[in-house]
Amino acid sequence: MVKVKSLADLKKIKSELQSKLDLREKSEHPEKIVQVKVAMATCGIASGAKQVMDFMIEEFEKRGIDAVVTQTGCMGYCYAEPTIEVTVPGKEPIVFGYVNIQKADTIIEKYVKNGELVDGIIPVNYETIEKQ
Amino acid sequence: MKDLSLHILDIVQNSISAKATFIDIIIEEKPLENSYRLLIKDNGKGIPKEMVDKVTDPYTTSRTTRKVGLGLPLLKMNAERTGGYLKISSEVGKGTEVEAFFVYDNIDRLPIGDIAGVITILVSANPLIEFVYSHQVNDEIYVFDTREIKEALDDVAINDIHIIKYLKEMIHENLLEIKAI
Image 1: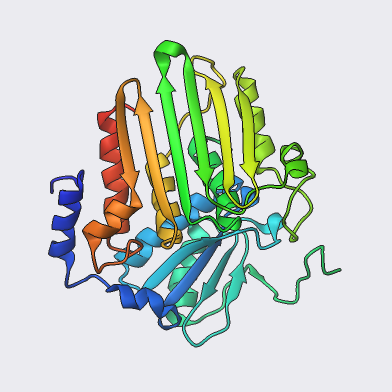
Image 2: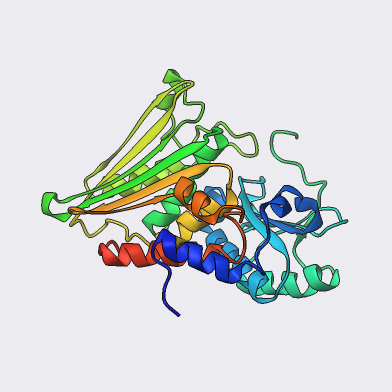
């Protein structure tokens, strides 16, 4: 396929994909789809959060899972970076630590698809330095 | 940070935290003048005067989740390593401008890295912020402007999971053409 290079190419791709594409309203109702937030402050980026984010975006698309992957600042778990917060519709958000590509894969396959809990969950009662 | 694109990803977070709605990322490569300049400008809330001189001190941070901030100090270190500098100017209520200057032919100048990926991440993770990324190599320039992209995409979200990879491809192809990567 010809590579997308100009705005015109982009428009063309858009019309080719139209049936698959989500309309903008969907992003205004994010509670209906899987939401992933990747912690991307200095600590996260330095430990590889970008690779994890790239991987998740790519895999959700490949595996046909409706999801939005966004970034957030430091969640205070610098020791466990890269960290991600996953919110599956109807469930409480869960924060996973030490997420590399393999771990991200397990999270998608086991937690997002089947609801099974996997290693590396950071408990919500963890307190940041300011609260102590 | 392993490359300049990761520094950009990191520094832009400051603009996002400062509630910027418009972020300008400029890279100017001028091998003939031996200069490589990175500018990040935003219209965020700005940094108070007394704080501006202190932001490159690792023990300065406005966050509350932890007590150190290494983003700007690390960029400063990498710029100074090449014989360059880091300059920050800011006005409260108007915005902030971070300029990192690198000596082009210095062996310690970081490679650009996956800049197309970084710009795509920033754009897709912050659909409400407008980004303009311009990259100049000698006399050739490529400008990526989310306002144009949004117009072209019309009713489709800029962070649509099917669209993201094409945005990345588009930036990548254009940078290849101007020999920026």
